[in-house]
Length: 130
Image (cartoon, rainbow, N blue to C red):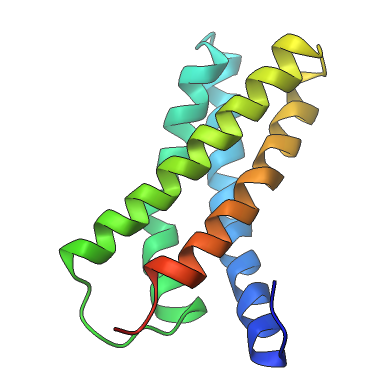
């Protein structure tokens, strides 16, 4: 994934931001499912809840982008997060509905798959200095 110390430090910063986003995601997800919302709708809403925080902190702190955000950068960010959401939602469905894994374990596993897509997309495509 990276071949140098700055790349490793960048990934650790990405993970730290992700912890905050994940707390928002999980709290929202389980709160919504607890009150009876279907879990796939809760997945979309809870995932979306962390996106703005992710954009700000990953842009400024993780990837240290200095130029002003452009419309293209925002579109790329939304695209990467959309792909990550699709992947994690698909994994969540497969793990929970097809394999009958417990919902909490399915959610945590699906979140891990989304992290990989999100980091690579953010690092290699969204937050590059142009």
